Length: 299
Image (cartoon, rainbow, N blue to C red; front, side, top):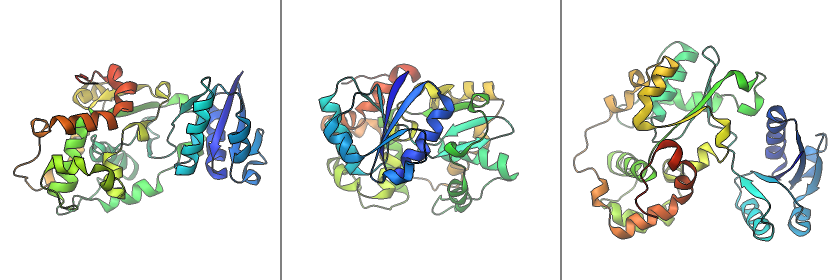
């Protein structure tokens, strides 16, 4: 029986505990939270977060059930002291469901997200979402994302579903996000991609930037075995054939997007910018490069 630790807020730990015990019965769970009362009814051992920090319990796997920096710092302190423990990032939200076709899709911005999400929206509501040709945003999709069911709340057996995510080479995804968010939508003032990268740490404080530029690991997570398939964006046609769907039919973003002169390309990146991006997306390359076939030419 594996000893599993969950660190985070009481609400986050409760949701994650319910899901983990649904898919794996052979685990012994300890919750280390800021409000132990919120998890007191769970069949788990629970402690205040301070006990995790000072006692350094021996665990096989450690899950982080919060995005708050405080919990990240605590986990890093623990990992430095305990080489036996592995941290898993397992995002709790941003899943879409097609209950008729038994599909679960893990969303990730700038990786055909609008196209695939439009397919799931249409499967749910029987009509395609509408997009604003100026902003390229869809209020229909925004509402759909807000109302979508959390994977932790599902009563169905997840083994019955085909679970997938679409991936993209991190640097190519970065360039696509820069062209879309900065140059085309003009949400930020920057006409030089290398200058933008040199100030990237500053821009990451903005939600729009973080949402579109953050590592895919923050969406897809470390637990690759959860998915039936991770596929590179260039190989989506093989996934479509397997599932019997055509996501391209819903690729409305390109059809409404204004033309863009002078878009940024890979060849424009300086050596310093490439090194910065490879360092920032290092975890993505470590986790997914072999699976989806990315050509990692630099380390």
